[in-house]
Image (cartoon, rainbow, N blue to C red; front, side):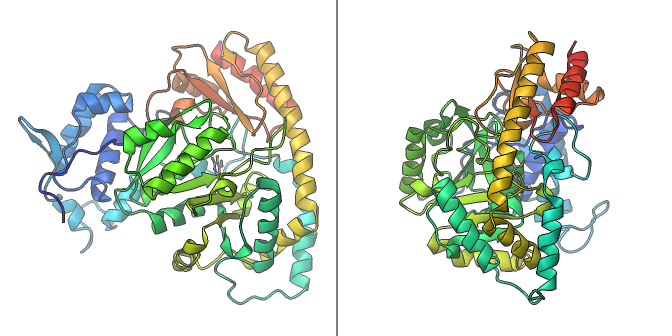
Length: 488
Ligand SMILES: Cc1ncc(COP(=O)(O)O)c(C=O)c1O
């Protein structure tokens, strides 16, 4: 039963994207409206004061006041003279008539649909354009062994593949190959039955949100953090709570203070996105202890751990988990190519049937022939060879970037080499506005997303993300020249 006087939310994460072409007050408006329509902010819930919310979001108070005014005018919020602003006890007609038919100006989508539409899409989700320096998350696509992949595909077709529906969890030989790989390379402990092949990490996070979270549940989200995971969680009705990251990874103690009752923590421990720090062993244990004690889940996004240039990567959190609290998300988007749309989950035994049910309800399974080709690629040694070759190449490309930045951008951008990953953060001088710098760079033809795009709160120091893996040293040097002209 709902209490008569709901408590204010512990933290209100609204997806503010300073790089987006939408005024901040509209973003605050959309974020609040989505939380109300999605059930994350229940009827009658008091909101923080406009000043407190403005501080929390790192925007001006006027921005929040404008958003509140608009929502009051539309009937989503009501302002009471002494007790502040709260969610209206009944939703405005526009929202609840959507079920029964389109209201004026509405395409007739559901309240849940409206909440999803209101979630700002990160740049990655736009896709469809040729990557140019320094878009992040792009592997060396020109180096992918296309002829070999074509041969494996044609061999599979010649062998008369089974064209009926496949296994919901994924093609069995692929799951066996993945289990062997993650066991050896990532210290994961799992059987092929715990593997669910998915259409990239994005679907993995979406399934986890559907199966493990209820609307309004809070989730610790690394701050700054990965927008792709954030949109999947928001679209599932969850309330991500930004939890700071320091040199040891997500600060578990801060998470406890900000949202002790969270149901899940999303982390990228081997190479935090976007800062690139590795979660220390002590922090990993602390996180696992919290999850076990709180009955919460840890969603481990291990998106690019193959690319370490100094030593072997730390084993996965999943491999350290004795209590079955970790859901591991792996992807072939970085090691192979993102258009493949194949990744995998490792789920605790007790959750296998639930994830299978969610997958069957969503889209049954991933394309079987692609899975079979990938299984051949793994078991015949091509995957290991390709990753080894890319690791060497990416090391050289990072060197080219670091040297070019040092030579051409000294005093304006600080981009020290990192021991892992496919991108680094170029730090601007303290006080500089990274969104404005990124806009200038974009005009000059260089894609370098600002760090604040991945943050809910304004970062203490601005930075520009520089992906290097997908670009030749020549293209990297030209990109740095362009950037130097833009930042002059
Ligand atoms: C942190 C993080 N996780 C996962 C992914 C990959 O997502 P997907 O497997 O859906 O392509 C990316 C891609 O940029 C990423 O940056």
